[in-house]
Image (cartoon, rainbow, N blue to C red; front, side):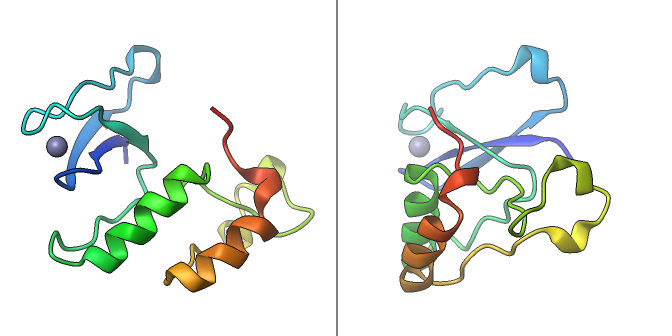
Length: 109
Ligand SMILES: [Zn+2]
């Protein structure tokens, strides 16, 4: 567990640790792009898997940095029931409908 940040230019993932009061999203040490916050449950695709990374970029730009999304009518109160989590889409086509369906649970910047 712990939070992560990701560079969407060179697909580098860094662990941020557990201390949320001291979250520091720095610049990527390789390309100095701004690192982006991403949920600990995120499993990075292979660096060569461009299609998967396109999907990751899309989800983040739509306000879904891989945080838990709940089925309709569910909320934080049901957190212990992990089967209430909705799984993230596997393809960009799937993702386009998915982000509309769960738009109420997006994280607004
Ligand atoms: Zn980078």
